[in-house]
Length: 88
Image (cartoon, rainbow, N blue to C red; front, side, top):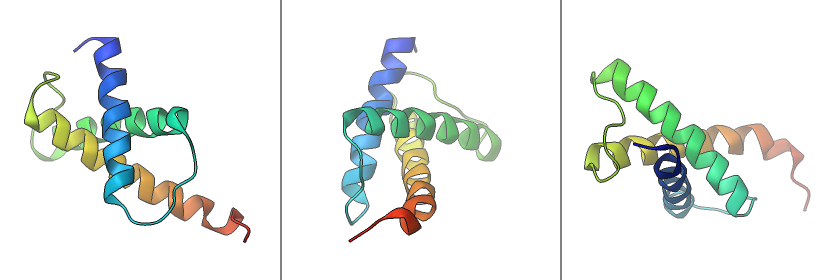
């Protein structure tokens, strides 16, 4: 998968992760892109460790599930880190 394909995967995976998790997450499309790219990297790494499979092709279901799962993990961690900094 090329660099632009990976960025597109990250953007979409980050957006899906934000839709799956309840509550308000701060950030616009750039934060979603960064969240998704980091999540896709994490998902690919964890997939390689646990299942022996990583991010293969853009249109692979395995690639999308790993990227979305990694994005959810990154979003949960980000929510824990930034929880104390929110003001009402």
